[in-house]
Length: 111
Length: 148
Image (cartoon, rainbow over all chains, first blue to last red; front, side, top):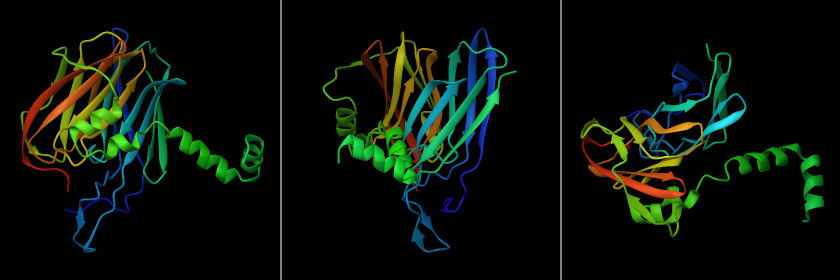
């Protein structure tokens, strides 16, 4: 099985839908989430463990969800949660930090 | 080194400052709990000396037979008041603590994600509500394991 070593950390997709004052957030983060158990057949070596450790989700400037993850969250992690109180024009942002200390964030505006 | 000296160092060496900041940002990631190799140890380290009450108010939404353990969609839905956190454990994974979520008061008691499950196992969800811990277990069959 091939892993995603060398995949550059890039890409957070965020989608939202709102109904009755509740906002559902669905996001996909591009990341290999290597467990350290996968074997790279081309290189003939084990792919080192490499995974997102922390994800912070904000409504405007307020943290609404903080995630601590292990390597057992699947490759290209999917995350969905529901919160209340957002209105049109507000922002939702998601940022992550991985086990190499790399990080990335993305922000969308609610319409 | 006293605090004043430390501040001087941080001013003098911005890289050190950013390292300290990133360390602070990750301070809550529980190294020992994530490294634990049994369900009991992971839960005891993560929730030391806490009573955990089994509850059917927590629903674990997951297929009972999983073809591909590398990508297992899972939803935790807790019909409990003021849910503060949701934690997911997989009993027979190499490290049973999979993920932990701290929810603000604005959040519903709901999380959906995708996880890896190595072999047939119980999934355990632990939910903190109004300061108390509640748990739910669900067994899943796994055809092909997903740890690599």
